[in-house]
Length: 396
Image 1 (tube, rainbow, N blue to C red):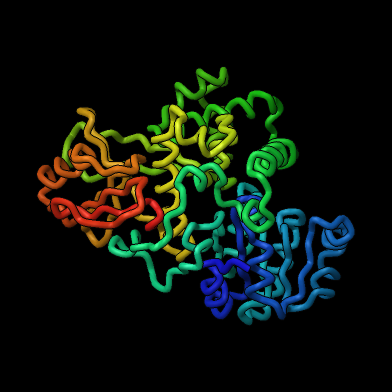
Image 2 (image 1 turned 180 degrees about the vertical axis):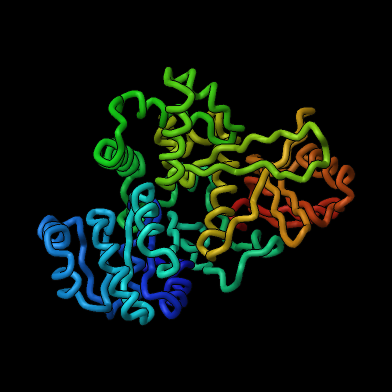
């Protein structure tokens, strides 16, 4: 079984809180992780019709039946249980009583914040990190100097980018084009249709595809809405749905005003590049290697790995990008204790001198020095050049 970074934090927080809520995208491995971390807890899934009916019709009887050490899977299927759980833990706040999992975050978190505020730790499980697949579990909090680490592995970035990191693809070796196609259909037809008031599913599917075409780009709601043929408010609402479903995230621009003409809109990324490839119609790793969006997809791969590294360590990701209106752009900024560390991300496998141009400009313009800069590229060696650290993409 592939070990998850988040496991030790689940175990740790179960000693502090009576309730733990584990959420994340559908099929990210939440049930497997909960069972592995708490093997002594009884398990019940509300996906099963009889269990769900029991929970909905007789919540007190349901909770009495399953006692004080229970994993309740897909808790959003019976949200009324949360109020009854609140009453139970208010009477007896012993830690680790209830482990709740749920994937439809846009409904679940609203209910948890209403009923279990201060009573539940909330942890997010995203798809695998490359480090988890290779058994390189981080033993400490992520810092700028540990975000990129020397690695002996040399996986093909385009194969990794195309397959993505959803557990089922790796655990059962399912071709990604098959599994991810089913995943998209399940998300649209089940989650979106049944849990939101979106009536035009065809337009939503088009919106999803157009969003994939903007990965790694600065978000322009007006252009996205216009291309999809929907209202601006609708585009904002639908993108919010993708964010709360853990399909996409926004990388904010850094706010320090080195230049008054700094760009202030976020960039859009997918948590899983395999899903982005599926939506873009990419059918193989070789096609990804030559795709017109190869640079943006590679940037997405690296930024998403950095994001997962922080989230799975229970840290708020201090990640940004920086760009001004004259065209200078840093793909990734890590802010740490009032210091800034900049990284450029290049998909090429051979390092060339012009890859360092923006990092040189940044060092000179900010006065922070080359030791605060990093180049991440598509090759397989780590080294220094001009005082700048160079890491392969697999070092995240």
